[in-house]
Image (cartoon, rainbow, N blue to C red):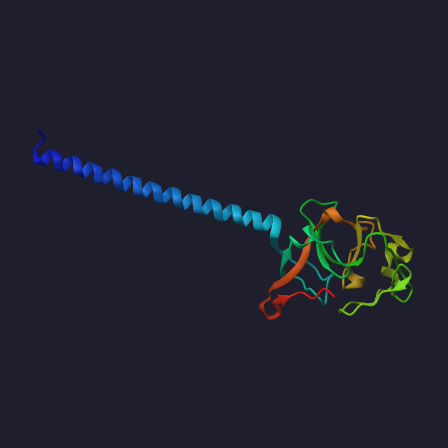
Amino acid sequence: MRGPDEAQEIGRGGTGEHRMNKVLKEIINTLLYLLCVLLLTLAVNTYVGQRTAVEGSSMEPTLSDKDNLIVDKISYRFQEPERFDIIVFSFKYKEDTYYIKRIIGLPGETVRIDEEGNIYINDEILEESYGREVIKAETMGLARETIVIGEDEYFVLGDNRNNSTDSRSPLVGNVNRKDIIGRAFVRIWPLSKMGMLRHQ
């Protein structure tokens, strides 16, 4: 038969073990929570949207250097890119390098720019309502001649037409559908310009 002191020691041991189990359980729960948050963040960043910063002035006046944007990565899983969409795509000659431009020509179309800087799609002049520069003769590049866009390709231009490396340059050319990361969706910085982006 155990004495009162021995029974007290057994009780204390049980309480200590219970506390340890409780602490261990809380640690495991916290770790599982953090893991879920991390996985959810990765999933959102990979499949839904991601933050990106604009570098340079090729999209002036629509977008400026150091503007921070959220790129919608999910819409193009359900629909095709449209004319005038502002897209982010990967640069084929340098890993982890991305460009942001506006879609002008769609798959299967032809694009040509005349001496006055007018853009022709399938021999019809393109009407544009957003802010952009008139193309100067010296920056026409490849589009001086008629460009045929492939069935899985897009012709893109920066809004700052005379200071943009885009589909007029052999470095970029027509953008393949598989290289499009997503559609610029909303500007989150600077706060004074925060809001949804105008595409058309």
